[in-house]
Every structure is written in C-alpha cells, then in structure tokens.
Length: 317
Image 1: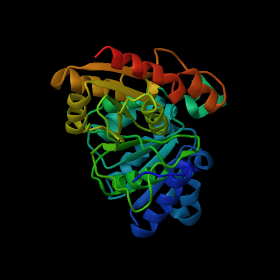
Image 2: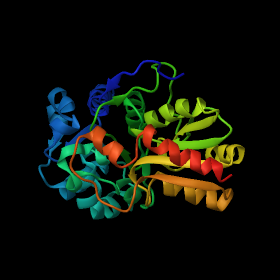
Image 3: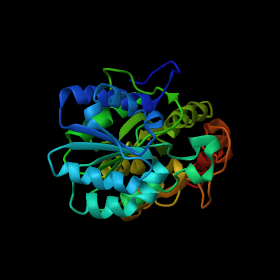
Image 4: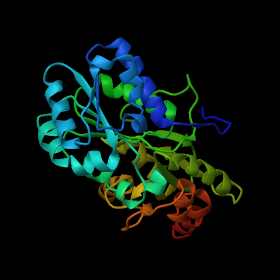
C-alpha cells in the first residue's frame, strides 16, 4: 500500500535515527564520518555512543581505510560523507581495501544527484552509482523515502559484505506506509500495475513517476511503475517480466544516464528481452547551482517534463 497524503521527510534524519536504534541492538556497530556529521546526521549516533563514533576529519581515504581495519576486528562500520567525496576521492580505498577483500563495511553517502542544490557541480555526484556498481562484491542501494531508508540501513547492518547506500540531501515525499512495506533484498517493487509502458525509477524520482502515472491515466495510458531500490544485484526477473508485458520501458533517475539505473536496466533487457527503452536522467553534463526543485525541472526529472518522453516512446511501439 502506498501513502495517500504528501508528507515530506528527511532521509538523512531517518539514517541517523536508525543508526542509534542499531547501536542499542548491536555493540559492534561503529560509525565514521569525514567532518560532516551534522549534514549526514551521524551526529545522532555520536551523541548517544561517543566512544563508538570516529570523526576522521576531511580525509575520506583515511576514513575508508580505518573502516576496513575496524571490520577485520569484528566491528560493523558505517562510514559516511557526501556521495561526491565518498565515491570520488576515496575510490581506490573502497576498491582495494574494502571491496577486493570483501570486508563488511557499509558506505552511506548523502547528497547524491542534482538535488544537492546551491553547492553546485563540484558537490553533485552524478556518477556515484555508476562507479560503485562497477566494483565487484559491492551491493548498491538507492532508497526512495525515509521508510525505505530505515529498512535499507537495517538490511545493510545484517548483510555480510560491502554495501553502498545513496541517500538524498533534500526532504522528499513519503511513498510507503509503516507496516505495509518490507525491504525484500534484492527485489524491485511494482507500485502500480499497467500494460502500456513500464516506468522504472529509484530515489527521489520515484514520487515523480507516480505523479506521471496519474497524468498518463487521464490520457487512457496505463503505466506500470517499478521502484528499484537495489541497483546491484538487479532484480532482473521483475524487470524482464514487466517489459514483456508492456513492450516499452522508461528509466528515470537523479543521476547521469551513463552507468546508473538506466544502464543497468538497458544491459539486462538487451541480453534478455530486447525492447524499446528510453533513459531519462542527467545527460553527459555536469550539474549547476540552484534550488533543488529548480534543478529537478531543469534536468527533466519531474513528471511534467518527462511525460512527453513517455508518450513518444509508446507511439513507437
């Protein structure tokens, strides 16, 4: 069941609160941050468990290395910073010190995509999902609301191996209802059933796909909306089944169209069910400074913008 009312909530706050909950349950949970605990909301954990919180400072490579070391001692490290710095500045440490030995480190990166806002292109990670899904052993998750964030963090704590979770800076609408949602790794969620087109998304753009489905329904078009929180490993079965039913697939993401969710879906379908596909996201370009809502519109990530792309793809069937 999906939420009826539009209630905005912070994924970062949900992350911080869930860390505290997990900290009470498991003394092996430790948290590291790169001098951004206020922004990432790991400060919530630091206040309750100061002896298990480590501010490594503006030294992201060191943070990943320390997390790797702690994992060899039986700890379950959650290490956080902005997505740009986690996946960009510390890529080698993630690859060689965490993923290669398959260590039990959880990287929870905030401020992904253009919705970072006024900080501009230097802080807007549009390549992070692409970078992380290309690394062997790495699980990649992009939750769509605060409830899914909570469940994804709990899953990561119980999962053995490296995990990358990307959460948004901005507050976004709640999609799921407490008690009616479970994080069923690595399954995708069919949010609405349809027969004319499949629209696949994750993160902040899931809410926009649901808006688009309602707009399409007024035109007599039934869209099947699929939320894909787990980009890697991909739930290929659900995607292929829907694609065969509708005959056309549109992917929408707050990320570059190169290497992210759209690429993962395209790779899956090209090998298993060649079909019409349209990828919607940030094209081969950098972001820019602006309010998050303005940037979503500028890059065509809102329903009012991408509905025409959906309709055009359906016409080609």
